[in-house]
Image (cartoon, rainbow, N blue to C red):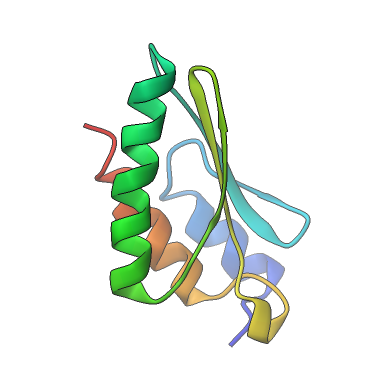
Length: 92
């Protein structure tokens, strides 16, 4: 089920650095090297497969941009927040 703007705003307060942009949850992570970002994306990919929920990922030198949305509901759902919370644990 698609979350309301109010629900999204309330939930975002519990996620450090995440924001809502164009019906997606979005965060840019920074890394000291390109390969550190690639390894982070590998960890995200494994978690996404396990959750059967797949983010859009953009790798740049020293940065990884993560965008989450639930296409079948046309916006942000609980699945997006659940995966965002998992992704937060993968940075180390």
